[in-house]
Length: 141
Image (cartoon, rainbow, N blue to C red; front, side, top):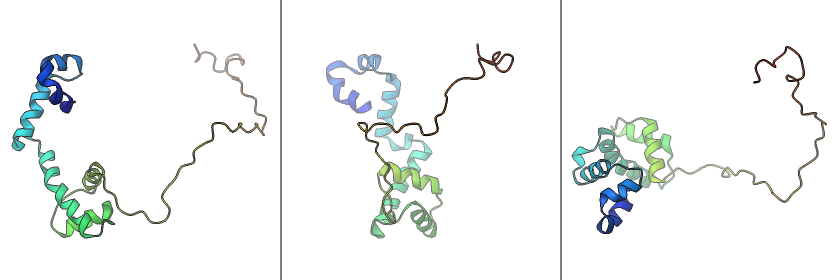
């Protein structure tokens, strides 16, 4: 949304765009201030910005095959105190992942044109609770 506002603020202005979009003008200006001054970023954002190049460096040094666990272990050996879930989150946001052994996981895609198979058990789908007096009819209202 901030990119959209940046692109159209010259023609329409910030406040009219923010009135249409679900974003407050103060949020937009706060984002611009953080972009201009990285010291205003949160501690997590600053730490993430410092860890991203290190994760990418370890990933590239190991022929782009290391996954989350191995990158996390390598960073620990190099003295970085970082959680494994943080490495996983940053790798996911950077769009990198390790090599998967074997065949990649594929789900089946059903054919919409194929007819559904017949019910071989001959089940009778009915609600017994509404027909039996006193059983569960007081719950259904």
